[in-house]
Every structure is written in structure tokens, then in C-alpha cells.
Length: 61
Image (cartoon, rainbow, N blue to C red; front, side):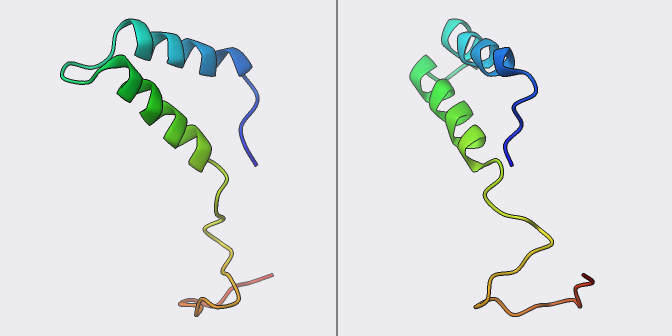
């Protein structure tokens, strides 16, 4: 589940990346990096395994 507790935080992060990107990175690359991180949130659950993945440790349910 994605964190949606502070919807303005994403806008502030994008604005900061656009206005003052890290040295050696253009603003579009900085914004793309933020978008990549936000898109990856909630992709997987570390305690869950997919049916084709072997379980390394026993899972308690």
C-alpha cells in the first residue's frame, strides 16, 4: 500500500528536485529518480513469496 499520509510531500520533493537538483544531475533526472522511488513503493511484501519462489525461511501465518 502506498503512503498517502502527506500528499503535499510529493509535490515538495518534485519542486525541490526541479529547483535545486543535486550537483551533476539535471532537474529532469532528479524528478525521474523521485518518480522511480515512489512508483516502487508497495511493489512487494518482504514477508510474502510468490508461488514460483522457493521459501527460504518458514513463514508463520
